[in-house]
Image (cartoon, rainbow, N blue to C red):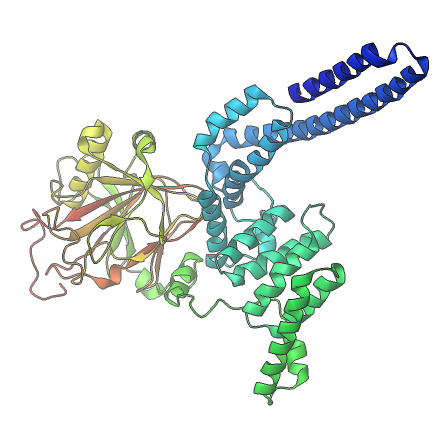
Length: 536
């Protein structure tokens, strides 16, 4: 506004000076100033129209975001529990707010820009937006969701439904493309085209989507469809130079493919051109299939006959003084290896206190490098965690004591209580809690031996996803707030039980909070004596 006002004053001042110096002596000359003024008024109206257009756009933004923030702040965790909401929050703060900043900068709203500049320090980065996008793609694979369902926000258990616009779908496809992930590029460029064809208004054009889609289809090995899509692109934009070059190359590749396999006729290739569903690339991890199937509730191997041998009981750990009056409810989750769930292990008040202490110190969760023993972040573990000691708060000390009472194991040599929060698509792919023989230095610095047992406390319910699964024997254990599951990682001989390889499934809807207590070997010599065989 100031720049425009200054321009108008300088312009008017310039013409006033000219009137005083040259034009006041001649009416004929003064008539020229009438047209100058008319031109200034025209420029002024254009400026006002431009400013009103900007203000209308900004007002529309403000109204939309006012409603959005009203909904999101009413239940932040529930709102962010929907992965589309989490992704769009990353996108808005990293991309859309910057567009608004550019718009507002044109009228130099100093107060807003100063505030935005200060707040930008807390904004997510490109990496954050990309990570949220990849989390959506991971959820799509794990739970076999079609792009349409995600775009329309149709997810099981979702309370805050949110949809993806054409631009959102297009950006997801571009992120996959930049990562060399042509499989997901195809899925999301197809969804982009579908929404455009349904009439959704967008600055993204069909030509842009077809450009990415045709090349990605080519990379997936579907030459015939790549040719068809490129022809469609050229029909929409005849001036598209790269499309013309690609069409020539695709046709040549298709001819070579047909010649190399004379057993397949043209009818086969015509049928292939209609294919719009592709398989995962060859480098897709096959182990993930069984793990993801369990996450979907498929492939669970508990038979009815075995299930009859699973029971519930009150547990007082051989009449432990603190459990005689208030024994815990113990439920068998699995028979071999034995996994039990303790109900009402943590109260709501204890959970909220632990979360309150942990939130300020949450950091990206790490894993131990099997070669160096050094803690490092990894793409297969997507969560944030904090480590809490007994001295943090009496609640932490009380929870640790309760774990010792229930298990009958020594807590002095156990690790600190690890609190973890899995956000959008949060997961931990199949892993062992104990260190294997090829990882001799994993826990050497602790001086407490290997991880003997795991106590996993669930501190939230998860509407969809987030199960703990054991691919080796086909078990899936679902989060239930206030409960805890316990299993031994080592046999009594000290040998690792390789059946306990497990994973935390991606959170589809909701926010998953857990706390882990890893109990080590030292100090358990008389509490869990060695067995007579290697696998006792």
